[in-house]
Length: 269
Image 1: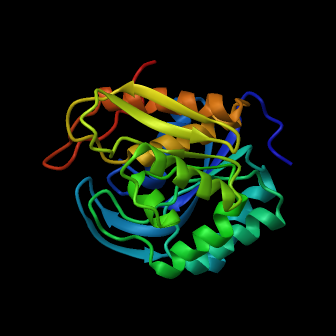
Image 2 (image 1 turned 180 degrees about the vertical axis):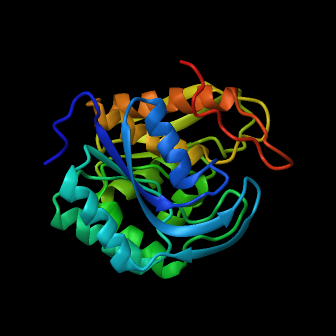
């Protein structure tokens, strides 16, 4: 049973760490807090990284991932779940088992495969496990262009291609998908995400913000969707709200040092 507490709705992030706080578990919890949601977290992968590089990672034992989820569910089942970096196939399988066994909400799946720095965070067997086991459970999948290409084996370089990729993700069993368009090099003044829930395509547009983006935008986007779902929003409204949230956080981005920009997760609405 999901949390009955309407004053403090609970959302759960199942993901890897970012000690710099710009992405991963730490960024997810900031996003939840900014949107008025109490954040639970399950660590899957301890990642040594900053805003511009990954120095190493150590996946958590699947049994410990299972124990974390069961400990939280024993106290208060979350209203919404998001998954991020899952480390390896064994962890993906452990997460899937717990979601099914505990009848937890269908997750927001951020299919993290490669860090923004270019470091691979998931091997081929892990990719297959996400595609074959986790995506079929998903409330929504939130890939960027590169992740959508990896999941669907489609080169996304045209509008028909991105629509076909969206169809394929939903055909895998996901209830919906939103393919983020921020990485498309179109020269357009708008950043366009494509939302598809099996019936119609909806383009979500915002002004393209000059610059080279920021570290952790995908984490914040998927976490914001989960937060809005925990608050009781329907799926499309949750996606629209998440896009607005990331847009304002990106507009207020800042740098801590010599690395990439960091989102301002607490930028005012």
